[in-house]
Image 1: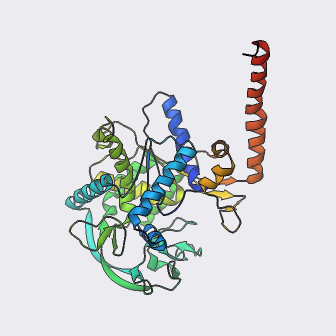
Image 2: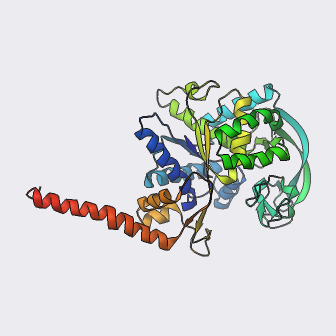
Image 3: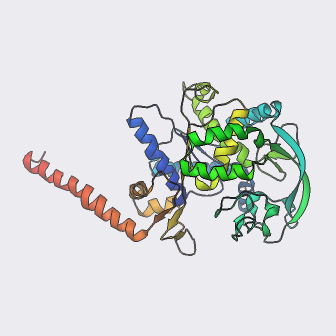
Length: 396
């Protein structure tokens, strides 16, 4: 069982905790049923966010990810997330598996190369990653969307397809330059995906994926140009694997790292004919990566595909997106400093369900539920029982 990997450029916040608490509850239930249930996660170390954050702090990226990953692990402990292994994606195991999987895809004819046009920041002298360009969605016209997908309609596109694009790094309008890139040939897996999706994804989400099938699957750009923090593509200096290519492989890497510390057999869980089950918990903004790209990469590299993908919605606070200016952007550490983490676990458990609908942390409702259910009922029962035990058992 896995949860999506948090970026190793900053602390966890209460939005992240929706997924980790949901996963943990499901994992604990499976263990209570007597199943062997292994939960792995990791910090997503690569990409421009980590590189720029390290520059800002004037430290090497490797130092930053070790620090942030350690903080993430501590937050998991604080909020009682029963993860069996926690790694980061710059680890040796992830490099090994990323290069192995790429080599298999290349040998299988699933990798192509072609020259593309990209957004380029003339001020910073760098090509801009998808999420460092924002603009108007070319499909539904929603403003202030990322350069790879729209949070409103779910459409995917390239940064140069955005209307009125702006570089997040410099605030200037990007220019367009050419560069040779590596592509994963997703279209080759369309028939396989059409058969796999309905049996392994929630019905409502499968309907959404059908829209993407109808629009036509496009080859996936899995490379980035320097400067970039990540794994360099073998025999291609200055070219790096796109963070989303090795991030999902990070699930396998964290499990491989656990195997090397225990008697678990990696192939038993990951080989193509494995009888084990594999479940991913993710947010609805990364469905495309986990239900189309990831199963195809696994299949092309002769590994098993996921048994199921569970999707949740976003967290709002008092009906609105979390905001630093409104004081509703709350880190895991700040919450646990002032309130018992189990209060939040209980509240989320009561809100979460099988759908990808957003959930709202209404602060007045949160206060009422904690006082009514936990203090007024659970604690009150314990208090009364303690009194009876003392009174009827001579104070013992």
